[in-house]
Length: 138
Image (cartoon, rainbow, N blue to C red; front, top):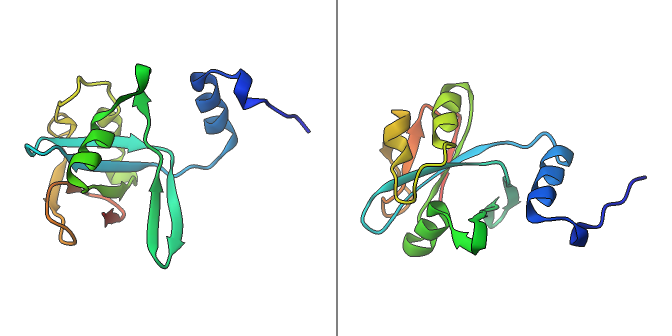
């Protein structure tokens, strides 16, 4: 059995190792909006179900170099609202567009041409993407 000391790896090396080791990983397209209402959509491969009672979905958010928060992290901290959209074939192309490294504050959903519908379970800031296999809001 091979052992790897995470302390000796850079964050980039740890990320690559985890992505190659923990498979298959579902991909979520997490949508959020900032306090001004600018939409954000980010593919997240570190997410999963954690508990059914209470119902918890764990989303592993990453930062830019220097520990600078990405839009998704910042938006969730500001508004407390986001939607986890599971990526199926109908959402795959939009997810790929949303994975482009746009500048902070840029609306990826507009670039992807993704349609949305109003989320019903919390004060609307984030949007559900259509089409998608399923959605969960927080």
